[in-house]
Image (cartoon, rainbow, N blue to C red; front, top):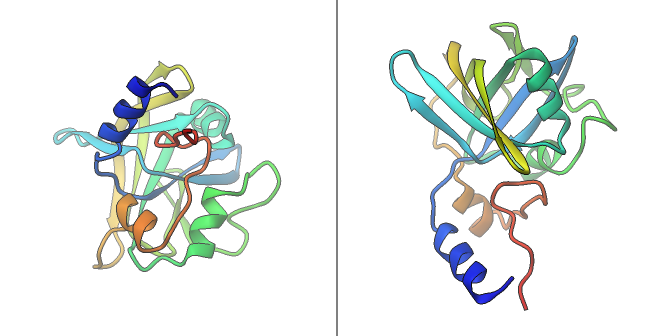
Length: 175
């Protein structure tokens, strides 16, 4: 990175994010990943957007099915659980084999360690070079329990979490 890029990264690293599991399906096989770039786009109709790396199987699943779910992770989510969805690929393992989930609006949604879930029908996909921004309307949602949502800041500073190379917030090491 040059000095300009370092300063840009330093500035945008102050943006606030939550930590979520975004899930979809390939046929009937569920798949999901950790994502931090999920945000509400509209109130009525309720809309959500998510940025997903084109390298991830979840991207293929969302592009093919036109659906995704968002699970809001609780602050007390254990690191091995986060790691299952953040550092393992669904191309090699079935991430849903030993976890709690349900089908909501035709899409798998992780309920374990989640505060709420929502299913989104994609109505627009925007190419963002390395990622795609999937924008859509919430078709179903459910509050699972009360609690404090896990933020990216808490994950990094308190849980000492790492950033996966396909994450929107990944920054290569600088000199």
